[in-house]
Amino acid sequence: MKTQEVIDLASQYIDSLSGHIFDVLDISKPITVDAAVNLAKVISKLSPLVGNLIEFNTVELLNKQSEFSNLGQWQRQDPGFPDTIFVGKVQPTPGLEIKAWFPLATEITARFKDSQNHFQFDQTYVAILAWLPEKVIYGKPRIFGVGVVSGLSIAMARDSHYHNPPDYLVLEPEDTTLRTANLQQTNTNGYKFQGSIEEFLEAQKIVESWGIDGKLYQPTREYQLLMRQLLTRYTYRLDTNFAKLDRIVHPDIERFKQRVYNTEVAGMTIGQWNKLLSSRREESIKRTLQNYLEIREENIDELID
Image 1 (cartoon, rainbow, N blue to C red):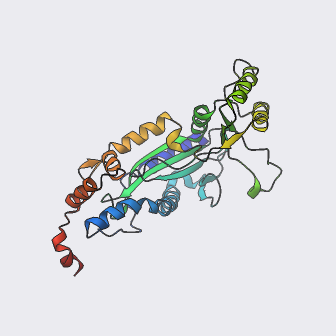
Image 2 (cartoon, rainbow, N blue to C red):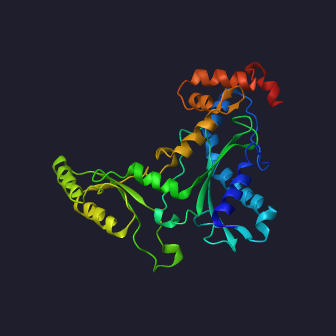
Image 3 (cartoon, one colour):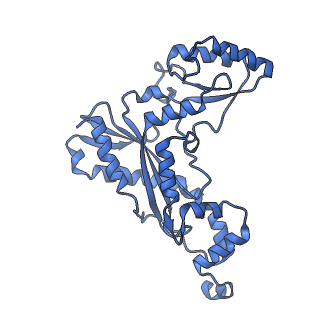
């Protein structure tokens, strides 16, 4: 079995998690409207915990499949990138980076900063698993959608989307191959121009001198040296929002997002729930949650008893 075949097979099994309920934690139903509103505001904070649970369960699921048993096994890397790799006879080593997404949040906040140079064999894929409590804001975590996307394609889409010298530079990490594993750098970073108009016009002329393909992103050492000259000569700001998966306009990720947002749960689509709960329309939120949860304020004392 080849690397791509291992990843394709693993993707099919991960996709089967769609609809799966994790019986590992259970959020109680709120008994008042105010409690429901507050819960809706903070429920996303569970995403890191649920993400780890999803990661554990995904590795266990894959290792239960007989197709993999004679070739090796999936192993978690904590810390490390990607989250899990297939250790065995298949080379280059297949890997999966697992990202949990809570679709009632404003966006997919997970970042993908690893360099194109680490995916030259397209051996690592990103699995995005959208989850919500089974009853929207309470109940057990449930997977509402799964998307598996090539890590190389994400890195290329990211770099093409952001890179626009001299206004915006995407820089590869320095060569750290001689360092120990825990000190090696693999992440790209984005830098936004902060100089004067005169300096910008000057920098534009430098970029024009690079030739007709000078603005096309290249992860090569030669091209990176050109950009580092700009970074050294002019003022740039490190972009802390760089590489968020929701902002790189990757077509497969965009289709996956839309599929999740169009999924209906409790009488509305997830997209409609997102729009409502992220709005500032407190009365509409209260009214909707009160109707959905069938909370009657006059019976609160009875519920508490």
